[in-house]
Length: 423
Image (cartoon, rainbow, N blue to C red; front, top):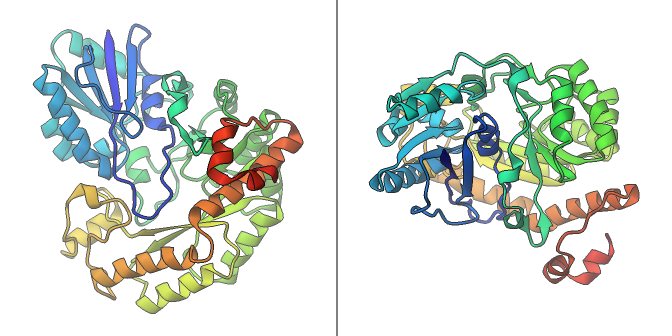
């Protein structure tokens, strides 16, 4: 059978550097399909959907709330042509109550070991409206290498620089952060993949730069150390969310190729300042992630936090406004208090205020969000800072003999030969 797999487009935030990473969810899902399924994949962020393409069944994989309305519209176009459409992915789970009205079927949960039955139902004309496996996670050992062969590699570069591949070494999260839906989506139990399975998938990835998309690697020290030890021989350079603040682990991470990490900056404490310094001491860059609009933040608190960021030598900063995504504690609280005034999912992009903050107007929080971006990148643009990080990693790769220039002529044209000589 021929399955058409689609990842809907979404609008990027104003003012941010625009690039597209190869999406992980669709190709991880494709790895769960039986061998008899022939998959054609379209990422609408880099190429248009061909609604007249011949296929038997359409699958739409959605990660972000800002994709759901576009996903519904895509489904409608295929249904007009007599095709059945099944939805899955993170934002399908978050918006299942509405998505079911636009779908022939919705799949909720993790797909390993489940798709054979779904496709058998489809072949027999008995496709169910809802397949709900949210509380029945499959054995983590059953996770197979993602189907990266489905990517059209030439579409994933930014000014000639090949984008990182996405990869995950675990599922679930033992933390339960206020604005986060991860425990609803993947459970509160940390589920690390067996190291031999991690190594097996790493060996299939040609790209020497990765984004390890695990919710947090700082969940089990022994597993984390073993992971980094196994990463060392691959000589890959990688980005991840927070890793353990421990000298042995930081040293192993550096040896394993840690390029830069995302680190939440939630206050102006010396701990945060020292945390950033320790990453840098091991040659690991830091992108601060800063959430604005929490109930414990006044306008003065936000201004102090922005000033603090300019003092602590961050390589990059990413600002978001508190966004009450469905099935989070934040959503439940704000709904109960009657403070959400905008339910247009296109606006749930973490850059637009959709609720009434506690200590200021919604318009004022929006102004402070814009002010944060402008202040941090006032003297050096986001793109310039990102390219400096790229130069740093390219120099490391050249020293190790792993640097693989791609489309050098385009890079020269985009950034200038004088800059390129430095790498």
